[in-house]
Image 1: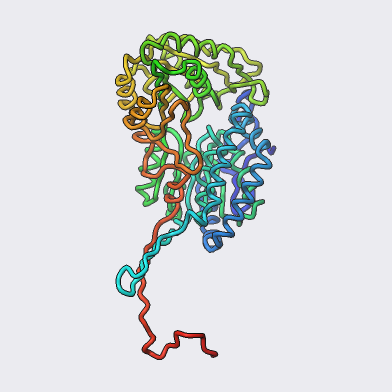
Image 2: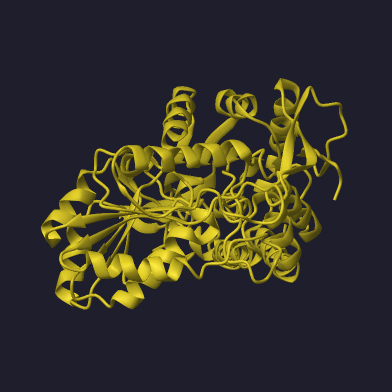
Length: 496
């Protein structure tokens, strides 16, 4: 791989001299592996201009033509998924099995977008009034921006890009500068699949690139995934500049364990959902709510399973959890562990000081018990391998704890009682619910998104709501005067 990671603009790598650049690290070694270009005003303008120039041709491409490109991209992505997984692991640090799972979920969304011909059908009402027909058509917005996070460098871009393209839009993608290579790889595959130059552009950088897209008059919509403070900023800035915005924010996902639950199943779920991808995912379980009297037994089972969890380089097939993405993020997560101890939570498993070969950004899985709602390890989105256990006296207390939280992304309940599960899914105030499923990420033909401070805007990602977000509806009312009395032949065509 090149030591320089450049933008992808108008179907080819950017060759200009960057005004600024940033380091891209190998999280397992702590070493710089590449330099990534950072976009300034000129690069933003070039990417948006390329997308705008490609719009008429791509929008004018038939649904069948767009679908052929998406099918071809799907085949290329499937054939080269292992190569992409290695790229993700080298820059993000997650183990390759996690990276492969991310790509599998991404392929689901591409497959859904391949149904564009069915999904973009409008409605038709004949003779709504005498001689008047009314029908609706769904049309693309134009140039759209996608701003994606570091934790899923392939899956999250593919939540948005396939649907946007299927609807006839052109795209400028701004991936995280922490692990940017996956986005370029995706753009190259789209080009190989036959996507016209300029229909998908990749723009690297930091806040300057984000602000450039948010403020550009030719960008009609923004899709964003990231932390709640940034999601709020993106939503407020984008809408102030007249854009349609869907901004998915942070999370503090709870997993309720009722007394009748299978505790072995619940403990397995807590460990996999809390520490998979080193906890760097918005659907990670952050808080296990143990309803009396199961707390002590559940904590013991979780602790025993954590002792067997192997932490190491994601390229090692025996590793089950990799490092954190950067040194700065590692220091931030460790500071929360320190704060949890200082606030009086019981530190059951301490991941600080774990010994792993290399100088990577390592933090072992960490478990706190008897965590209270006023503690920062409970209130804040840590985004690392730190799992908290809170105790609740009853189902009602557990529900009240979740509903009082400002986040509303995902939650789960573990129980053998169908009535309790049904009651929970009806009463809990979150966007995605799992019943004996710890990470309830919807399949590609439903839509992903939370409530409250986990979503700004009114459209969830991918699925039906994704197609709705990337189109605007036009309603046509038509009347064709009856010309049969004006000498018009309504029979067989006449020779001219």
